[in-house]
Length: 153
Image 1 (tube, one colour):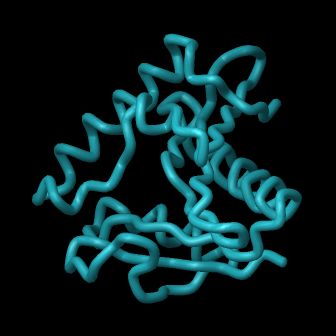
Image 2 (cartoon, rainbow, N blue to C red; image 1 turned 45 degrees about the horizontal axis):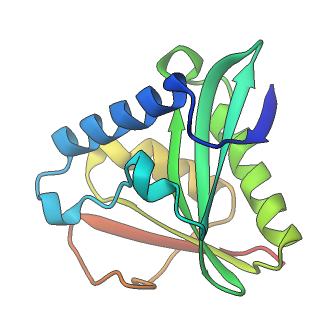
């Protein structure tokens, strides 16, 4: 599998992120509790997106939003349906940590859902050393959100 920075111009990644947003709208009971970003929001200069490809086919994506000089937020982690349960998310998470450390980020945080649907994501992050934390950045306490963080350097 190959991981590279993505400019979000390919139809496959636009579709993957669009599908991610559609699913988040269905599984998040309150629209104010959904914090997934669309393609336009992911094109901001403080966000870097990476895609994972296998034999040229999009397997997944993930992004880092720079919150300050040393703190980044994981956004838009998504594995394509055909590539689920094949280690794409773990591979991408390790890459996000490495790339974040390379640019001076020492702490990564994330927000995910509190519902059962998000349990696999929470297990992934816990298994890679993330811990539950209080809301960070512009987030506020929300019973539908779970916040996690990890020191990476």
